[in-house]
Length: 171
Image 1 (cartoon, one colour):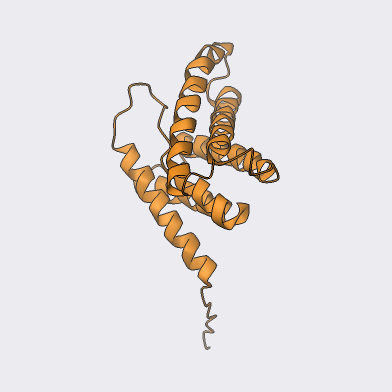
Image 2 (image 1 turned 180 degrees about the vertical axis):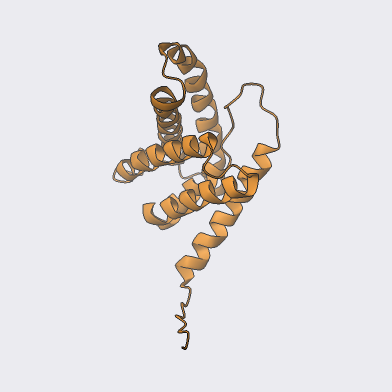
């Protein structure tokens, strides 16, 4: 009995996605080491990488980077398939869905800051929806919405400004 091997040659896009995903994973792991004054609130620095990939290479590559970051960071932090991982997936899927729609908006009016804000609100919205349905099926969760929306506003703007500066201030 002989074993057959399938050989795969990575394309330049594959290598690019892997590099961006590695950077995003490193930022997520670094961010996890910094204590947060409010549980569940993080700046989402890895989302800057997703914005850069979206701007330069399109939604498909941004989705790959985002998905690989969620899995890779969860694996590196020991939380793969935990509730935190599931919440991260929900947020990522929601923000990618909004970004898929937002990619069709005119760039002269919707730059990195606008996209970052849309993604941040979608991300926290996806997480809160899943938390309400699955983890905390109680209406009291609604009382936390203003805190999380304020955090999404602040970090969405900060991450968007950072992305805009890296991109040469297209907004």
